[in-house]
Length: 109
Image (cartoon, rainbow, N blue to C red):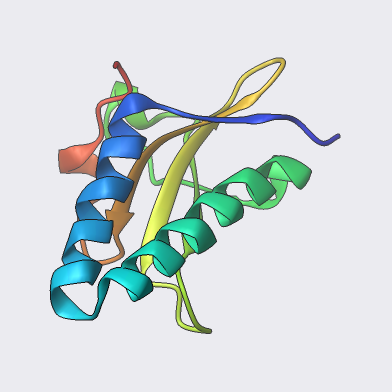
């Protein structure tokens, strides 16, 4: 069943931080394009949230969290970490693929 998707304040901050990186490394246009693509991909998670992999649970905060690879191009390099609630999906953080979720995740806003 499709669910609406919310993006937490921390995930929004993660998206903005990464968009600034894109602007510095590429261009403002590329950064805005990257941000639009990633936000749409996060929204699309709600179509079938149960189909995504669970995050390896190493802490109480990470139990039950799932992850979706997002980003531009065919090699998605970012991980949208989300939880499924009864009436919606919440993207709690967005990390570069090389970052360790267990040390970075904190689902409270």
